Length: 163
Image (cartoon, rainbow, N blue to C red; front, side, top):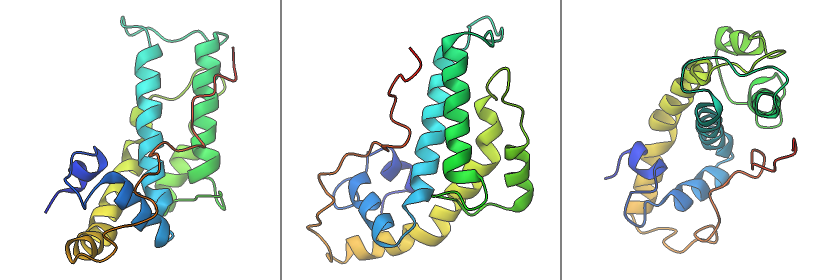
């Protein structure tokens, strides 16, 4: 049986595909766990692609810096803030730490999200992966309506609103 990492990287063979896993999470009302880890990964990729190679900081008034601060705020608003629309289940200490990280001048480094991402990843491994593998392995739901859906989260889609 495939690992969670194989499924999330879309390298697992059918019927254990990423789209099938997303459908299972959606059916079980816990899709936000996957969306959070994917959006955190996108934040990391954007941050690393925009951060100067010499280790210097982005200038606070640059478009890329403003864009990254907007992405950070979207992550907080969607998943971390109390009563967020897709609030993930985090210990209060980790939640408070994330909410208190300054974002006024420069965006926080992606490593700031690591404790939350690790907890959510563990939650998926412990609570969701085995039932998904059992269901898919038993041949149930072998044809599902979500098989053709895109894995891109609409909330964090790069719309380049800051041109």
